[in-house]
Length: 405
Image (cartoon, rainbow, N blue to C red; front, side, top):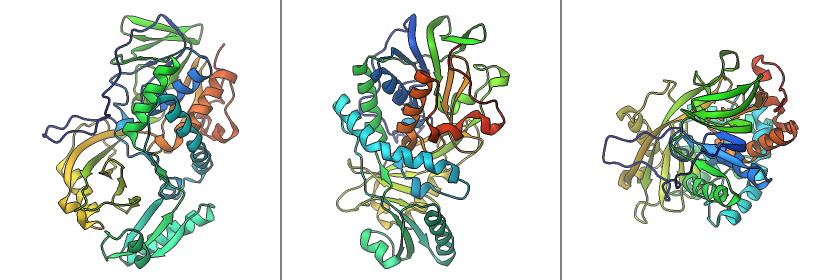
């Protein structure tokens, strides 16, 4: 999601370190990654750890797309819904990788990422919502997910600040979360230490082709030659101009608006992530409570709207009355990178060109498995079995081709 600068005095939620030092575009690199967000940096870090020379080209500043606008949920159970069974094995495989990913990231960057294994509560208010929640619970159980049905009294025992009108809930104990700002700071530093060259404010305007093979990327009158180019530019991956028409990706922006509230001992906060039919809420260790997110299929339409903020605040207030006393610290909007089936695209587009995009609202959850899958594709030309359902073949495209000629 792209962070838009609000017109009001309310600031946007920024990464504490505020970007990286400018770097020059090298003449040559082993791998050029287009996109300096979570997915792009995770892939770059993974490849650099394997000894590859990697350059990241970011159109804005590091993390300025979906990565710093996200909530940081690692929640395959709460996210599971009808039609998402094909994605579940990939999501669960990536969740299992997260502890190792976290440990390596914190060790190699020297920074913490606020990894919280507190679980998720999915709530219902009123009879109609209870019936729909029961349907969700049955789906989770049929899919083999760990989940427990709780009456309203037990939900309020776990979260005393919730309204008495909360009727029932599902506890998903294996859902976790991280703080996106801290993850991006750690990834940026880990990439630096691994030798990744991070080039900001450098929109890629074209690809260099040689005999049907992608041989590098261009940014205006500058270029970098590369053995492999990885397209990881999120919601912009489907934009015209960069790829030939026959290789265009089925990715579009799905706008979301979110806000951050400041909790205090007086207002209280939550102990874990809360989901309702209207909003989700995620408490962070720095005292912020993130409320998100609207879903608007309106293209790249910027801005935060009164209607969007009202929907978020009213949705949160409906179950958590304490938000009335919380200060609003930041509001923002952004663009989820969404494919035609809401699942990621992990594939070779053409010899020398690999795609890692379309993660919808699961970018943080899927970052470790995506990094491993793309590293395997770049290095060995093969996707791991769990990632093979997410090639372009599912959209009627040919089977994956070789990365290099």
